Length: 227
Image (cartoon, rainbow, N blue to C red; front, side):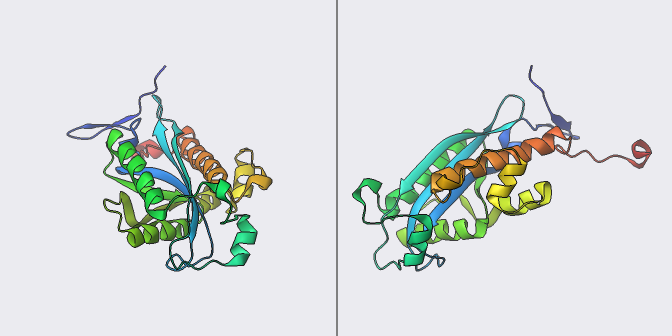
């Protein structure tokens, strides 16, 4: 049975079971990157994963399309060996199947633009855990490669570390997942695809939990109804 959540204004009815009406026209894309350092302008982007989301007929948010790419360091990129030890990436391993930064960003943008259009959204927005880091590397790579038609908001983002701190009392990804009863295998952490999958589950859980609690759509009560 479809649960239809609508809000009627003077001139129109808003259907909140449509993704375009949930985040002010933004199309959320969950992203995680693995890099060779912390400086988006100088350090190599080595791995990129993204998951889009969709709403089912009852307005519940669920993961949708996936994108994953291993990436060759751009020419002149800085490679911090400590970062490689941390994420376990061997940049010289041919089995990585690494592609150029240009191809990786182009592939990402094509997937995102298709989903954005299909859902009637006006623009896409990056969702990530400690999102400033991931967004900085995606934007720097796009600028470096000269890839046109960037679908993402240039500075806006949804940070699941902030959201989970607010809703779940935890800001570390594995701890937030534990509170949300999302399975998290520490041995697979720091793989861009695995971390993106868990972050996507966490984001959907928080959005859906707020809906379940009656917190969205937000209905302002009058003074009379509140008493």
